[in-house]
Image 1 (cartoon, helix red, strand yellow):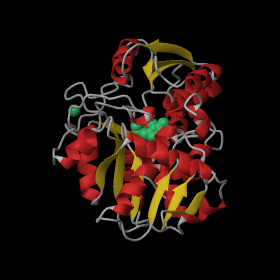
Image 2 (cartoon, helix red, strand yellow):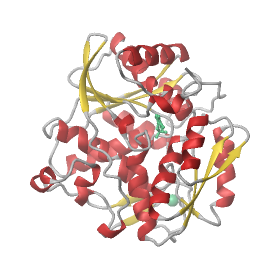
Image 3 (cartoon, helix red, strand yellow):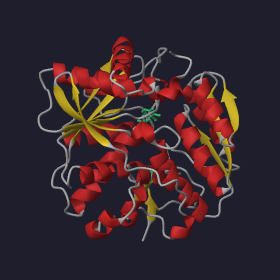
Image 4 (cartoon, protein in one colour):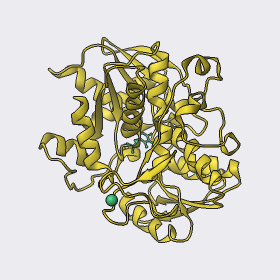
Length: 368
Ligand SMILES: *Cc1c(COP(=O)(O)O)cnc(C)c1O
Ligand SMILES: [Zn+2]
């Protein structure tokens, strides 16, 4: 049984078009029991659909997949500390967003929906466009006018109609809501099926570490689709009795846009309203994170932290990582600036630390 419910008032979604709770405005969550038949999983192909019993898509016929996922997990020396780095820039569209888009568009196909709209700072739009076109679904993507040219070209080549919206990412999010009355809102932020895909990052890390959990994870964070996804993923594995502890989740923001890290510092239970400054980390320039309260409580529960790093540190780590052969998009370097900050602080993480490269360097063309 798969149920879409409001986490706050526990009411079921009124219909399949509702993208958030009509009573309290919260995004819906999915109630579904993930199962892990390890012997079967081990024999399957190396992609994220190997966790078939943990992904709430009922019929195989509806799966839209490029056999994505199961990206390499490389042990790597970062500033004298061993860090395991997931290579999620190696997804077919060049970012980890394919995890979520594969599952979300499979759901859209199962509902026989033929038109979707999405808003994105770039990568989610490219991912949704790619899976939609593969499934024969019409796709319109709203992006801020200032989005990287490489991402806009990519989404357009993948068949999306592009709508460039002047102003900030927030204004793009406003603009799409009008369209969402007409077409299905395949939102990577609101739609709970997207998180059902990003959670596979946790499954892969655990399987690649011989079915054990790392001690901490260091991730860039904007809307938190990655952080909440891995949290849900680790929780599934704990509930199934496969791992026995929740890793500390450490989310990294840029100082130019840090509503969550500021809230963390001020011990606020909800995001702080900030004035967005120009940033090289466009993928996480989210001034008003929809899941903000939930993220703050989840990070606290895991014993993690939310921190910010300077633009200078992001650029420097981006260049240094490229010199070592890791060519990532600028946004992704935020995690490595975070690793630097975390390991230089007094509360340096003990045990095994995992991070990831969220997007490919070719996404940042125009910044070199
Ligand atoms: C989307 C994205 C992130 C952050 O993801 P959130 O879900 O918004 O927290 C990080 N890096 C890249 C390259 C992205 O595209
Ligand atoms: Zn509600």
